[in-house]
Structure formats: structure tokens, C-alpha cells
Image (cartoon, rainbow, N blue to C red):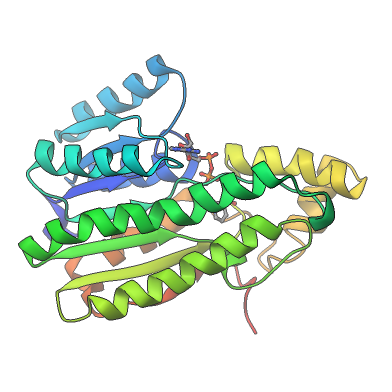
Length: 263
Ligand code: NAD
């Protein structure tokens, strides 16, 4: 437990599923008030929202901004700041994936991945910084990927976006270094989330192999632990970076990838 997290206010993009939902649960369990965002069936989102609020005695609200739409992103940040009285923590997590050889990559898929996985973070950060500056405190954590540090075939847009988010992280960290606002990226290896389940199917098709072969020979082949990274392992890193103890860390990308990106 990081006692100093109690009462902090967090916006977490893409927190209706997978890694974002796990981070929301983890921060709420530390006493952080949370704004959820993302897509999904309304009743499932409401169930998650109510469960977190009740279990941890914190305020949990939901905003349905589409992270490919700058106007909706601005409304997410301004509404969150108004509702919670400020924003201490911003977790940029929303992301999508499409897998295809670069010469067959659809323009619409490229544009959507760049918008959601990269440009959305520019917009959330831009609108959140004034609130953090006013408070003299802020923690920004961008969920990048091992693919922000290294590449794989068939993932041109995703790898470009994730390398971009690592670059953005460094610039924002440097610009805010004297403001007690940190900006870091966390670079997960493979985590078995709904997004990865879909990728297994797409990669199997692109490479002409079975889904089991994709998991064993493609994904975990590059992850030396031979195990998927767990939500708990990611939550530990994110929670630390959001705490006072993490205040010395900024403008850096932290792999949580079972050794994948070791040089
Ligand atoms: P997921 O599909 O389970 O969750 C993605 C979340 O983003 C969902 O809440 C979804 O509703 C939301 N989202 C998608 N498009 C959106 C949009 N236009 N507007 C608002 N919300 C939108 O995926 P995940 O695996 O939990 O991935 C979360 C993040 O972690 C992504 O940025 C992904 O690139 C990154 N990541 C995942 C892995 C992995 O192995 N799962 C590895 C490295 C990085």
C-alpha cells in the first residue's frame, strides 16, 4: 500500500477491459478516485463502476469519450477535473491493434491506430497539464509496449505508435521536470487480455499457423520467462510510478516484459 495515494484523483483511458480495468481496480483499492473510460456493454461498465466504488469507498465515474476524437477527449478531461475537483493521475492506456503486412495495411486501420494509440495521449496530456500545474503535482503514465522499444513484422502502425508514445513520454517528462509532474511509459510484454486474444487469431491468419503456435512460438518465444505478464505485475509498476516514492522517475520507459527487450 502507498498511503499517499489515498484521495488522489485519476483518469484512466480504455479502462473498461484488460489492463486499463486492472489498473483502475488497483488504484481504487489504494483509495484513488477514478474516472473510467472505454467502450463495452453499458450494463457491464456499470457493474465494474459500482463494484469498485462500493468495494473501496471511492468515487468512480464513467465517461464514454471516443479516444480518436479530440473534442470528446477534451470533454473527458474537463468533465473529470470538474467532477473530482482536479486530476492528479493520468493513465493513457486505450489502444487497439491490427496485424497485416505493411503493403496490405489498410489506410483506415493505420489512421485509427495512430489516433487512438498515439494522438489521444497528446490530447489528454495537453488538457490535463494545466490542472496538474495548478496543483503542483501530477503523475502521467503512458501504457506503451515492448513494441515501443523493439519491433515485430506485420505491426507497422502499432510499432510506430508505441515508439511515438515513448518519444512523447520523454519530451513531456523533460518539459515538466521542475513542476513535480512526472511522465513515464510502462512497456508491457504480452499480457493475456481481450486485445491479445484477438491478435492471436489475426497473427495465425497472417502467418498461416495455428493459434496455439502463435502463443508458444511467436509471442512467448520472445518473452524469456515463457509466461504472459500478469495484471498484478503491471499494477505494481504503475502504482509505484503514481506514488510519492515514484517521484524521482520521469521521462523514462520501463519494460515489464519478462526480459523480452534485454539487449
Ligand atoms: P483491451 O482490448 O482489453 O482494452 C482496450 C481498452 O481500450 C478497452 O477499454 C477499450 O474499450 C478501449 N478503447 C479502444 N478503442 C477506444 C476508443 N476509440 N476510445 C476509447 N476507448 C477505447 O486491450 P489491453 O490488452 O488491455 O490493452 C491496453 C493497452 O495496453 C493498449 O494500449 C495496448 O497497446 C497495451 N499493451 C497491451 C499488451 C498486451 O499484451 N495485452 C502488451 C503491451 C501493451
